[in-house]
Length: 393
Image (tube, rainbow, N blue to C red):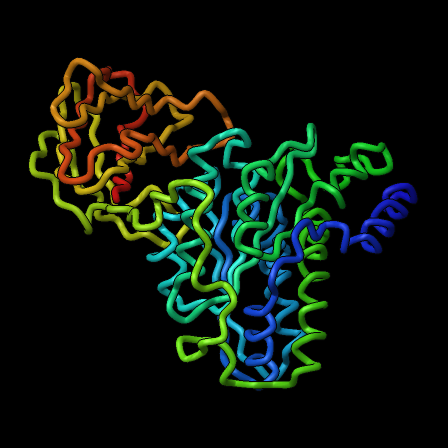
């Protein structure tokens, strides 16, 4: 490591605490740590996008999530700590709140980190609502897991979704750390070449992941001191603990209408009409193996239709770099005059995107019909149209 980078990184490590943008209420984290001190079994879980998944780390154990988990193992040697990473690249808190029950809470996690700051749009009231819905859904889980929010950043312009995420962190007093004041600030003032920590201005390299983990761990170390002062207690937290300052929750900042949405794939919903669409039954190998358990079609005129319940509806499909690819049109409640295009041709070149199209937001509650038809297809198409899921509630 060249001297300038070495010196900048040294200064960053000394200033990790500047990344704490909301100290919040650490009581759930402290309770979790007191159980760890007593030698309990705990699960540390992560929900987010590609940075959480570990993109551009040279191996999975060097991503910030695993390094944070490894700190828990070192800090609490008597405990049995399990690691669960539910990061999926290119996804937002809209998908996060829809899959959190199936892909995170099903593991009964004790400590959860969520990270959607570079995928949620920073001026979007929609993502402010889906993010708040996710926070509320986690906080009201019966066993009362500890929650921490992480804000990553784009290193070319310092952009992220803190403008809409931070008020939620403050509203619910959730501990929150940001890479903007501690890492990006050194890039912005010229003391650190951003290529030392990221090759593409977004995803950290190994050093970048290490520093992200360092900011998180610096907060956790302070909470650990409080836990040690109180002493080990295997009975802290959980459903039987009435002393929980997070509950009841405050009135939400948004409508928080996404708290009950669910993702429905081909084993969870049956179409009432299907012509030319085929159910994909190939095994899903991991959470990030996300183009599975859906429906495929490639012929012009192929159709699939569903009946769903709820006031919020979205469809999830694949945008692919293998072009050309078919284009579908979605019709809501039989309205064939105002179709929504589902174009599976991806304009970027970094890989296939798990794309989420909002179809209805705060509409009339009750039953709706969703019809999808392939309206553009040619023999030259390099890929099929892949419908991954419906998100409703």
